[in-house]
Length: 225
Image 1 (cartoon, rainbow, N blue to C red):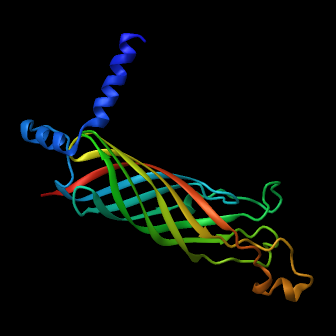
Image 2 (tube, rainbow, N blue to C red; image 1 turned 135 degrees about the vertical axis):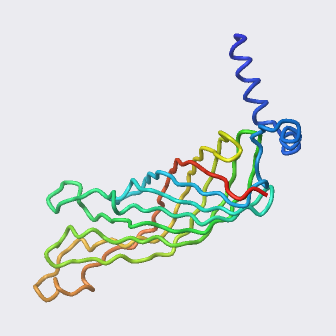
Image 3 (tube, rainbow, N blue to C red; image 1 turned 120 degrees about the vertical axis):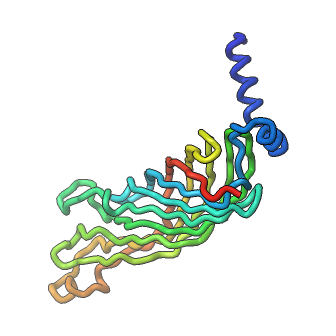
């Protein structure tokens, strides 16, 4: 194995083997150490989000997370994303327009537990219950069907990573699975005008849906202790 490769592997191992105690010593010995929590009370993370979800026209969005630290290993968060302004537009004639849904956004309180922390990298897992707001896209009979937004119970869980740029700024990446029961449009229009106008005939299946969201953001730490 070539020396540069050995050096790279050694550097990678040292990065992830740094313990909280090592980081604390670095902070005491060097004024520019990047080590944080629990040196801050609060963090705010604006982000760009992309979702991988079947039957949806809503994939890209903007997110915002507010996080409060409870100590070295735990934090509570309120995280949300807005998708509707970036939703794809479909027409009834579109070949792939078979029963699609649209997402306005989601809001989820979460609890995170830190699994690994070095001077520059942090890795955590977490999740919690929340709400997602969706609706069917009116494609089968758009002349009569008008769907309203509806909030649905959701559960979010995932893995969360940060790379510290300074003690007050980090680049963050979240990968979470938001699980909920979706509402689809009925695939068949009503048999007559009266049934077509009846909202009870508009709704179809309710599949369990996994919305896989990836978020890339900038975390700013506030309120130093």
